[in-house]
Every structure is written in structure tokens, then in C-alpha cells.
Length: 251
Image (cartoon, rainbow, N blue to C red):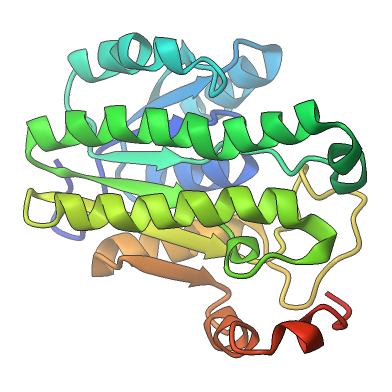
């Protein structure tokens, strides 16, 4: 169960090597989280991440999880929940893709969509049902400001995040009143391994800043969190820019 300050005692990170996922786990461990599950493809990186978190004093276990294998999600995640209640699930996996390549290789574009959207829908529904059975817990989903309005530069990635964002909001409405809290997190450009080598966008942030915003959102039981907060105003304005003007903006 969460403590009196809304901090989970147990955490499941889907995308166990995610920079934001691990930054969130580190922050929550310093705030009393004691059990962490890292779900991801088996790799030295996953085991290294688990060892790091153990060094902070948490009990950490890893579980093989592949977003592209939805047929296995129910069995894999069911085993995690069978070990005990999970107070918070952080859906942190995703791929950026390569826009220029993906436009010319539909199979690669489909892989982006299947990872960011289909895999998230499958695993999100499995976890939501488990949390509802418990009668408590939070499902936190990493969306992106890219999903607010598709840009020429990354519309394949952005469209997958738009779908994920809409799905998560609908799921939150479906679970309202069940004891399960659903929160959408919309970061802007995050300086991380995934964006390494890319030109930095305005209002860029860090995995640690996103982790801080997630903790604040948990305490407040927020439904939507923007990181940084100023992006809420920026995107509100961009949503209303006429399309002919928007396509000429250097975004």
C-alpha cells in the first residue's frame, strides 16, 4: 500500500532499462519504496540496473517482458502480481524510431506503432485489471508532447503517442471510482539515451526532472502531468495554430 504521503511501497517498471523509469525508481526508493520489479528484455543492462537499485536498499527483481509480444503479457505480468500487490505501475517503454527511414520502410514504422501503442494497450490493460482486482494502485503512463499535434519531423512517433495518450485518458475514465489512479505524463524533449545525438528542443528536460514531476503527481493524484509545466501553455497555443501556418513553423 502507499504510505500517508502517497508514495508506493512497491513499483513495477515496464521498460526496465528506461532512463526515466530508472530515475523514477531511484527517487521513489529514497522516499520509502522498498520493492521494485524491472520488466524488460533480458540483457546485461537490465541486470546492471537491478544491481544499482539494490545498492540503494530496495529489493529488486527482474522479469522478461517484450512489448512486441502481447500474447505473453498476461502470463508474464500475472506472475508479478501473483507475488504480491503492486502499488504503482510505470509504463516507461517506447521507441523514437527514425522518421526518414520509417517513412520509406513501412515495416519499421509499424514496429514503432506496435511498440509505443499496441504493446502499451496490451500491457496497460493487463496491469489495470490487476490493480482493479487489488482495489488500489496507480498506473502511470509516459506519453509525450509529441502526441499533442503531429509534426512533420516525427509524425510516426507522434501519432503513436497520440494514440497512447487517448487510450490512457479513456482507461482513467473507465477506472474512475475503482480505487485505481491513472496518470498521463507528457514530457517534452528529454535528454536521454533515446535522444542522444538529436538537436535539443526548447524547454528540454531530464529524466530526473520527469521523476520529480511523477512523484509530485502521485502525491496530488493528478491525472495529467506536463514536464516542464510551461509546455501546457505552449501546446495549448500550438493546438490552435491553423494547419497552413503550423506546417511552416520550424518544429
